[in-house]
Image 1 (spheres, rainbow, N blue to C red):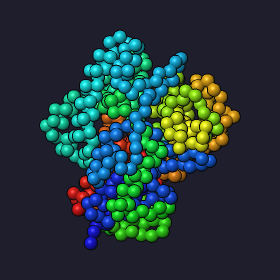
Image 2 (image 1 turned 135 degrees about the vertical axis):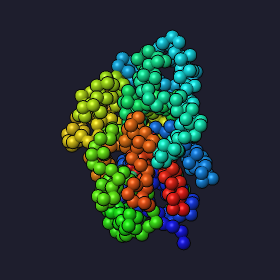
Image 3 (image 1 turned 30 degrees about the vertical axis):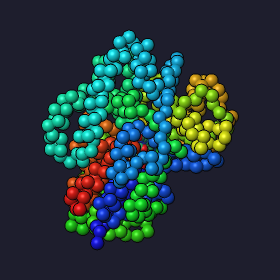
Image 4 (image 1 turned 45 degrees about the horizontal axis):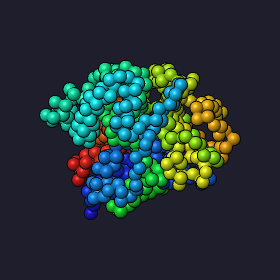
Length: 490
Ligand SMILES: Cc1cc2nc3c(=O)[nH]c(=O)nc-3n(C[C@H](O)[C@H](O)[C@H](O)COP(=O)(O)OP(=O)(O)OC[C@H]3O[C@@H](n4cnc5c(N)ncnc54)[C@H](O)[C@@H]3O)c2cc1C
């Protein structure tokens, strides 16, 4: 008889680990609190609009290809991809820049800002490429359970080159002095949840992912990835239980014996916790079996939470780009309001995704589908509708001014989502949107471990453990943890 594994949560990490476990011959059941798969990447359909509720940037297409190829499939078996050009638009304080997908056009743009920047970019990218390749092949697909994993000649040799100690801010400033170039190259690390001065220069691999790897769009939105992974999991025999929150894990002799839900009890040989790590530890396990204390969790640097708005507009907005970054206010001040002195921001940076620019299927005819995101500190209280409206009006005014067209009276659909919703819907720790920040002190073996220190057959996957936040890392996390389970219990 096959061994049984219960996977808690059907986000990317849960779907990934479940499929790898099923491929290895295990009897797999995913138990999910919500009524559908995808977790933070779930979909909202309303009034003819289809919104991706979480991630909107498709980077690192090679990671998705790697994932599906592990099951003898290709991305194109499930969804089509389009490379966006421009990759995105930046609204600076006084002007805008369309960031071209073509590398030569990108070089020219940098050169026009700072003489010599094109040649500096070439050098910068040689290093970034090295980090991407070594990082992806040798560092990211490791469970981070022991330092020994990283003792491989090429990795040790590479570690020096990997720039673990220098900050990415400093690293970029060695190559470029123009403020726009610096800000443009610092932007990708925001996906990692920390400020550039706190993020290791290793992560210039994200610049390689941005500039060379490109920004892509899966037809019908990011939820196409969820649909694909769900379909694949079903084909592999994974069973799904939706609308069934897990309420506890029964432990006998330091082993998880069964998983208890609001509806049933599931005996198991192993458990993969792919819901928020902190929730599983502190709410599903008796105290003696928790690996980390509340003090430990409180001392972690969390990636930001977000104020999100899903907006339907009943007219087209000429000149709108699929991804727009509003870098028209002071980045440092907003960063301090997120990390150093957590508080509601005075005048935040924000981001807008307009999928209807690329994909008419996400909005009714002659309408636009807009998603606004303001990064805010995790753990702030008071995100009631009044506060949400205040921030929406603030960014809407800035948006209208910069695009030169009023849409206030054309909004036919409005829905907000904030920290308290992250807690209610996903059991998110402090309402974090995307896990733990990838700071130096929270990388690889320094992340919460993907294996419980107290319960022999309990493992963790997802954005609070290795390798970190983001869709590609969540897919990788599922693969890596399933290998650890199979190695120990297969
Ligand atoms: C607004 C936003 C924008 C983002 N943008 C990007 C982007 O553009 N590109 C990118 O790569 N990444 C982005 N990310 C990050 C990325 O979406 C996440 O890192 C990734 O989706 C996390 O997947 P996960 O499987 O770890 O967690 P989750 O998606 O949170 O999955 C966990 C699942 O566990 C379930 N669960 C919780 N408690 C229980 C329980 N008691 N019982 C059963 N189930 C439970 C939850 O309902 C959920 O379905 C973004 C995230 C957010 C929120």
